[in-house]
Length: 270
Ligand SMILES: O=C(O)CCC(=O)C(=O)O
Ligand SMILES: [Fe+2]
Image 1: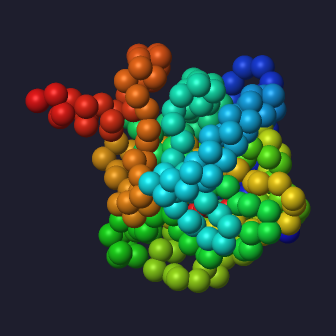
Image 2: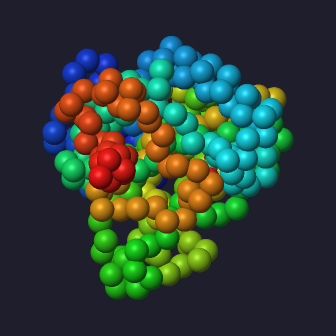
Image 3: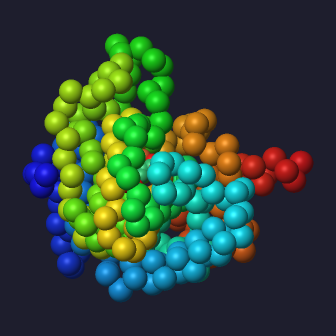
């Protein structure tokens, strides 16, 4: 189902999203729990990331290195991805279009909580309905008024459509946290390479079947308020992987994004 119920912004080719549009985007996001930004990255860069990712991914699966791998459904594999090379680029983690929207949602102190990829292999079936992270308090009175605290930026490395399969979202379901099967309608957006999907960690969603004959990798750069820790998704691996050498390549202005790791490094030194 193609439907405009998921708010969508086509970002300007030159310049930035104007501030009033960012405010509107925030309002729409807070209502829907999901927002698509079209045209945030050049398709050529996405192709480079896909090439790099598939080389690394195939190696890990071949080695059956379970430390780095978790099954998140039928023929659907989640891997933590190292922030290095083509992935350690400001235009990606501090994207000039997405970053202002994300910091409007999460505050200027936001950090990166995790960086990973979910790859649906050819023939994978529809995924179970889920939210990536539960509500904070398990009390509808509190959770229904909670502003966003963790937002994923999904970057598809192939076009998402009825053939490759897309992610089905239930806009508004992030507010109805006591509801195990959301009554809100769902939408299956077509999302071309070079677009991003921002979505709330509490929104209900599921990956659809991959009917194409190629893998469907989607990168997830996950941002959060600085106090938030995901306690459900990363038993299998470190949620955010960056070496000191790679960290040193990050411009000081954006190093706070990796604060979580730096806190760990400081603790180790003591
Ligand atoms: O594969 C998809 O489209 C969604 C994957 C997903 O939501 C997950 O693994 O948490
Ligand atoms: Fe998910």
